[in-house]
Image 1 (tube, one colour):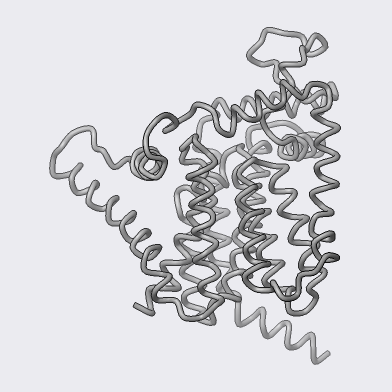
Image 2 (image 1 turned 30 degrees about the vertical axis):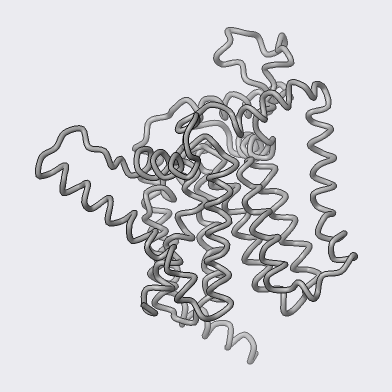
Length: 364
């Protein structure tokens, strides 16, 4: 009875943390019903529907082709399959509609926000900072957009956040369980979207930075086991044609896209990912209104990156430096590996930018 009273007391004291979750759900549902369907959603829905109805994960909506005449090059090989399998499960259980295809993103948006709470409470003891960070993430346009459309970004990002939260919260109580569960969720993230590699690098950093003295051969084998199992399952899926898989998957990760091409990779990252695609810094015309919006947008980007730059000099506690280094890892992974500078990938890095700002701000 005593333990139950303590638990209920904690819930009463922390009820206000539900406010960002409720706001995220309300804003996302409104966005779900307001936003018109678009090409990526049609591509996802078509493949997932074919899997439910015909047992084959392939696209036919742009091909005037009967599903039973599908050629090998129509199979989904340019993306890991877990997101499509999850969408197919939603369709099979709840039926097919625009809201249901977006429901999976809404679910993982909430999961990601909850994981951020459990991560933040190990980084700072300031409840106000935790609350404001969660609140700003819940209304951040890139987080809300990813939570409201049928793309795999939010699912993969949330699975990585769950992995970090599990590791940070379990490492002192049960290190073996922390290693196993965190790597399971990072593996699932990678099987959802290629940017899951950022989660793998960040988790590797966490283990080395926080617990390198506790790592031995058995721990390494335990950590590798989810990737071995996941790799075997993915190998079975791509087995029909390796050359086609490498051509499609490799082209998707490093091929042409927004911001790809020649030039300094750091410059392209800033210009395309942040200035043009995300915040639309360059105005269509120069007048008092467009210049005012330009100043506001630049101030937001400037605030983010000012805190990013000075964070390493201001943070004193190891737990706060940890989140700074994870942000750097995410930034470098998106910059160096993923040449497509789409703003959709900002759902990975924006929560970390916001967390850094509000953990750091009181210390400046």
